[in-house]
Image 1 (cartoon, one colour):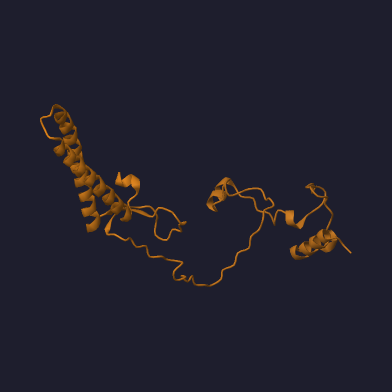
Image 2 (tube, rainbow, N blue to C red):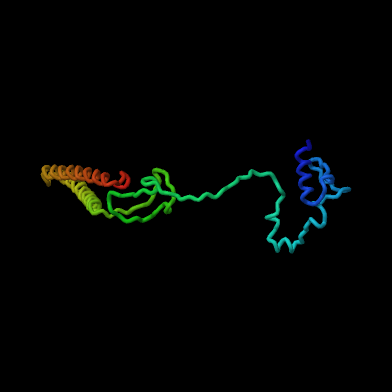
Length: 198
């Protein structure tokens, strides 16, 4: 039996018009064709382009490369339709409070991992706004009470003011601290972090 390369050379020679008897062996890597004719190397079967000819057909040094062994990946076109999976492909995101979105961190259609920051929202919920207002108001009242207690402590030492007045102010301060603690927890229940409440 002839070797596969000799058999293929014979088939090629037949289609090119040469007789199978014209075939000859080449060792791997042997490019010496002197002394014998090749149908594939004849002047009639070869084409050599000038630099202008290469430019005319759109060939350049970037597109012409030596042949090298690469992995071939076959691709086929298959008709199909992409169908959304309800509850998995698109998810509606709701917020417990109203607000204005100030920045969107993802593009529409982008796949996200759980815990990814999607957007920033500036809350405008009426309950939250009133809770923040009351919190700031209580902070101001507590600051006034603290200053008044410091002033009364100095005056009470001299005996100009009764100690009962200082005691009443300290009770009022303690009540404000309790109210402030409750308001802080209310803000946390609205979804604000401890750092945001501070």
